[in-house]
Figure 1 (cartoon, rainbow, N blue to C red):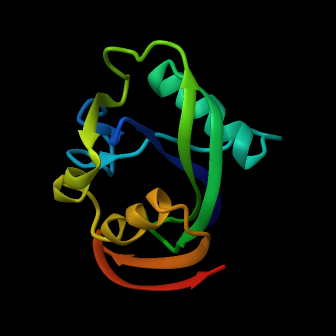
Figure 2 (tube, rainbow, N blue to C red; figure 1 turned 60 degrees about the vertical axis):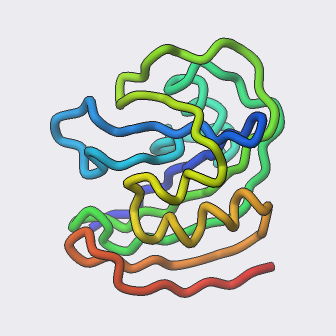
Length: 155
């Protein structure tokens, strides 16, 4: 088992959130789910540097104003590793959105419809925290891709 640091970013514009429908990779534990954008740290990166790079790689957008809202630990999430996800809310960016991403399809979703998408159960709890700019630290427990419990501390 190892520790995997990653980012998960929710980009907002005109009361819509940019979501990624994960449908392109064959071996994707998120296949069929909708997520924010983000990914694993590269060596030497800070959370913010990772978020900016991942947003650009997956969307073509350059984040210019982003807020670190929280850190969520997902113990043994993929059956092998503990994931530590830094969650960001992006409210300003530059550039042109890619028509498609190598991980799935990008789509602007009305804020009030995001929780109706096929998202992870735990995401239904933390996405509102991110969009409301709450500050938090949490642990979300999944077993065999089924959400079991969570602990959270707000700051």
